[in-house]
Length: 181
Image (tube, rainbow, N blue to C red):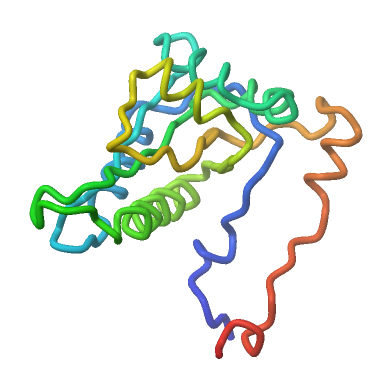
């Protein structure tokens, strides 16, 4: 018996991307899924800067923010996304202590939608927040959370051996008794 939904079980962060273009309707559906995430006071503090390779300058700007180790494989993903959380609540008129939590839920919805469509997303913390703020003129009222590479799975044989090894590394999750306190 499967205890969790197959979409949750199947999701993982590949580093083996194909440069195949993502269909517009699929790409829109990812952000539609994110849009429907719950949030405190329905604030919806998440914002996304989307870069589509060959279609806009956002892709190159986001790519240029990545650390070199991520650039090696992320350059094959046809979409790069900068994820941002608004720090302040327009509803309460004060800092929104749930903004990062809520943004994470929106990304969780996006990841589930991507998996259901046969897409993969890999989130990265290895990027320059300073460059992202500068390139996109992002003020101090926003937290830059992560960069995501999104696309179809690529051919593992086309990647260097060390990336193949990273991809094939066994997935590990802590047992329930370690996370339930």
